[in-house]
Length: 76
Image (cartoon, rainbow, N blue to C red; front, top):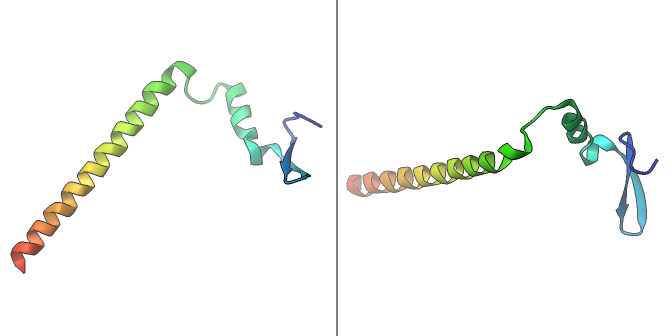
């Protein structure tokens, strides 16, 4: 059943492995059909806000570590 939602084929080396569709994104396909998830027009904004949040958390972590190092150097 090539291209079926219940089973898809993966080429591994020279062998073909038949795996359930859920192992290769079948749930994603079913979710799209059900209308679950973000609309395509909202994905760039979602990715931008995710990246900004990750960068902000990284900066916060660095500031906390530098603050702890400064406190530790004053104590020692």
